Image (cartoon, rainbow, N blue to C red; front, side, top):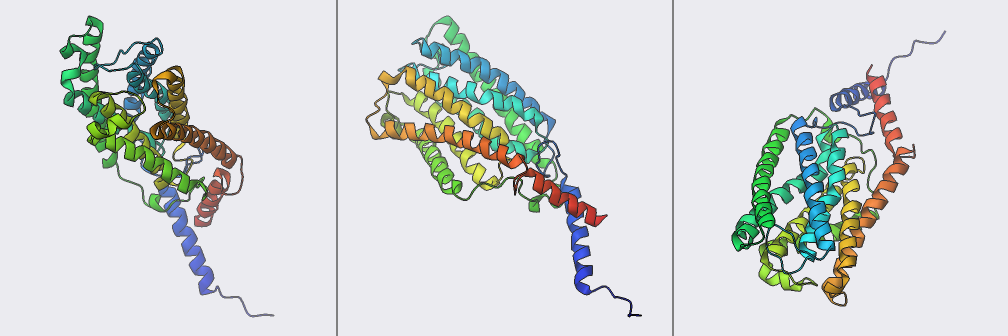
Length: 336
């Protein structure tokens, strides 16, 4: 008869490590519905804010876009051409479906790639409206409807900007569960996409920062005519798009940026329609005109490609949600 086997130190260490991994995984939580593992629980206040902003964005954005398509500038402030307020409206209407979709998110990590740029837009547009108060329709003596619209625009933006800051503060007061920081990536970004995203995000971020901070210099560089308020308003949206794209690099997980992947192609498509209708107002032969085409096409391609890659990862391919959930399940089983 042979001597009884004694457990090796390596085996015992492996069991301890497995148990620790299971504890971390259990603390982080597993979302079986979307395949995203753990993080801060999403505050209901953020979901409510996103739904409210989505409804307002869809309504007001459609108004601005449709009037622009008809050849009228119906923005809150006086614009030199219908294109600028139409682009603001197209962006607002384009992001609305993704804001409604945040109701399906369970964790803050799934929503922040869209909510943080949203907060930038709300606070930024409110600041731009105040800084350019002299060009508001109510102050400038515009038609009665536009004057009332501009007053409602400022009041609504002020309330929503304040609500966004309060909701973000409340969200970050929620503690992150143990082990959430070291969770597995459900669908990591492909290596080839990261340099392209860095260029795209830096382009939008740089243009947005320039238009917002130095409208007198950057405004005339746009391939159509804008005033100070138009330049800064468009700069806010460009800045938010840049933050969103670069934020996706920091997340490095397609499952975490799912809502943003819905917003980006919708915004790009809506903007493309406005640019096509007002094609005669845009100097397409200039460097800024070509750059604008490349940036809008990059947004659309990013969203479509990201959704396809996430769909493939969800189909049980290697490195997809199925394999990640299996890895977490094995750790939980080992801990038991």
